[in-house]
Image 1 (tube, rainbow, N blue to C red):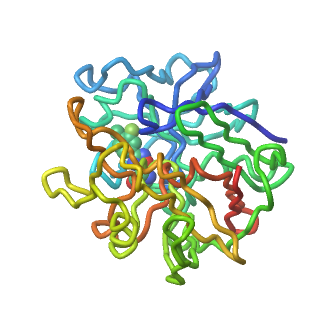
Image 2 (image 1 turned 135 degrees about the vertical axis):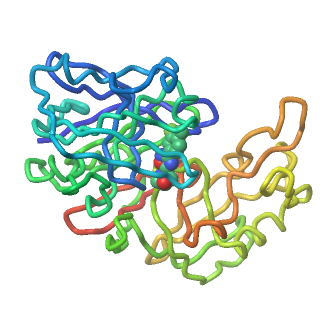
Length: 331
Ligand SMILES: Cc1ccc(-c2noc([C@H]3C[C@@H](O)CN3)n2)cc1F
């Protein structure tokens, strides 16, 4: 079996949403696929009115295939301290023609203000490893873990684009979606993340390759690229107008600064992924400013590097849960 679904970026590529069908008859919600967490949760009719702001709600009572998991609950907190919590139902879920008939659907009773404010986002599909699923008393499998046994190949792929729709595929690798070869790197899933080690980086075409191992996670749910302080300094040191602006909480530079280099990161056996300098001028810091907030920021607050959408949209990535490895290719 296999599946394929289009993803669509919200403005500034802040997040990527995909249509998902839940229940019988089908209820379609737009969900955020997040490889950095492992809960499948949705806005639901259990929510207080004050927490809803235009989102589409999953109504388990309107689904003939929904069964409440009595005594089960969940509560999750994300990297930006946003959170959600609620009850659990088993129901059928279809993503891109791939159906899981008994998915644990986590129906929200409570969401933090950040989720309420994000009116296009009806919930998250966590495709990290099930070990960090928050459902109590017994953690539940991710959508991919439920689908995996029936798939042609135990992989899913992410093709995120800058300012344009891309695609998530399940169970197969579309050889037309990338160029050159796929370089595979081992994954350590013990923390529930797609954790891997990059052999180093290079700033621009003229810079030398820095052989400094970077431990991090591939996280489709994080917007920016969060790298070690030293790497940020090496990159922004090459942009004439760049500075660390404490009032903005990060590095900023003139959006059209022609000295902005491309950024390359190593994926193994000599392969590198090129992030165009234009991706790193993330967004104007305010409408009247000529300065942009950098797409690369320090990971000092996190403790490990997060290869978020700024990096992922420069590549075609294979999340190979069968062999616990990540595949990286240019496109
Ligand atoms: C309003 C809102 C807030 C956070 C997130 C969110 N989704 O994925 C992630 C990252 C961080 C890490 O927790 C796991 N992946 N963050 C999405 C939202 F729509």
